[in-house]
Length: 260
Image (cartoon, rainbow, N blue to C red; front, side, top):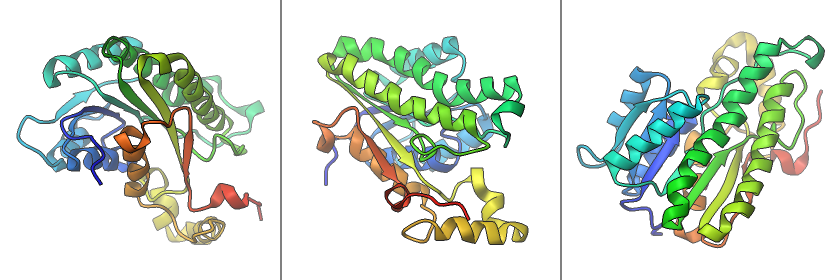
């Protein structure tokens, strides 16, 4: 199926590894020109090396997306060097240290909100300027199953990811008249660097198996499965879809989670 992404200019934040890298690879495989953004230059360079396409088709930019000035400057470079901006994927985020809300360090709260929610606003706001002018564009925000389902001990992360879903809907409503579609993808348990120790450390074996078995499909997702949902929402096949969230969670939210 032709998703209509060939030669589109796509920005992917948090693209240095994991789900972000898989998303960047998937867009490049469809013939898109990808600008990969992250804070870590070495891993980012590796991502761009892995992308299909002609030399110079893609761009690696180190950027702290929690800084609105850096976000705006990065998108200015993308427009200048790649010739425009058609799709923005807000994937960047960070984990939160486990803590009850009453003992949560205020700095930990701030970092979680800035990385997982404010960055989405900063990047989308900066992208909207040219998308409104060209009267077209697609924004896909990465939320989490921790958005609609409250996760104790990671309250800041959960609140931020719930905020991403709400922000996605507001963007969809406000920018629809300019031809901009905005949707989100909420991954469930995924084989990524964020849970590498959970999946590989023998000391965590019992916990890992317990979590895995709570998933209807009895496995963690591959990052490419989230990337597939992102490509669908960004492409022509989703031309009448905006303000929606697709859950890539193996049925986890359909059944509901019950703690042992």
